[in-house]
Length: 397
Image (cartoon, rainbow, N blue to C red; front, side, top):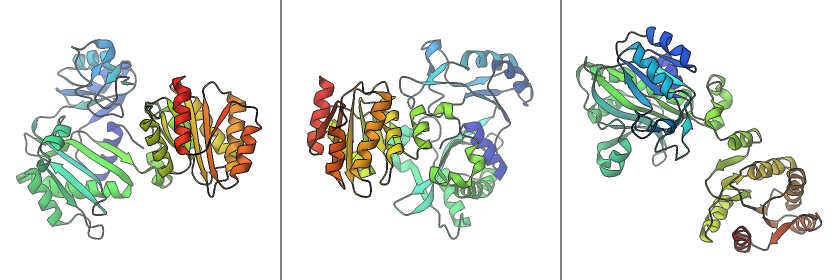
């Protein structure tokens, strides 16, 4: 689960991290009061969407010459003018794709006098099985280019989970970021704070880009991005309350209610499979035969009839889907249960696109019998290769 920048900063502020004062707004009429509540005279107006590259993004409605999704303002009037331009419009960034995301929230923040921009993130480094800091002196909007062109400028410092962030770890991070004086002292406080927040809140990513050294020599968290482990949210009600469903795909939200592993993709063949490995193989073979999967959908090993029917409805709700491939290997899950779920879903929502079903495993003959006697336009397949060929042929018409 992701949250907005302003929410992430509030969370970090609660742990004692240095962040600027700011106010989140959802209505243009709130802009003036929000700006006047801040010290000024420099303000920053930031689009709040779940995507990076906001500063370089462009609003669809404002033309190619308009300013991006993060703007400096030198007066309250300038803040109001920018808010009126940005709020409610569609911001397109390198991470949103051409469709972009509608900006429904803005964050008006007190400005900062920046001397240097640095990069810092925490994530789980699976190569060593530990949480690690990734840091670079090359912070800012072009960090992706740094990672691609000059990876030696990014340093990784893994943290011993029993010891936590030690003085030696802090010294290594300070050295990698070339911090000295007051900034280094601030680092001694900040780096353990960030690690504590990451671990206690079960984050999968905490990114501060940029972490800035101000002209007065002090550190400040200028931006913050957080992702949380969805499997741990049951013990973080405060984090769950921060969820903004308007930033998520409606199909993925519905899938989460049924505990389905579902990810929307850009193709036109819907997939319903049990098991992540089999789902990946199914998507691969669809691509092998020249088409693209419309989704990743793993119904799990123990799904019942209702869960299967829910998955089918979610897939058919995608207007891009021109055909559906159901590929089930019945181990714990029985093929007849899958067949009953598919038939029930088709009878309820109808079938407007070709449907190919491949069943194998427990009760496979009974499952095929249910499908064959359903009276529905379902094409049976003998194996995965046969299934992929048939659904691609059907979509090609």
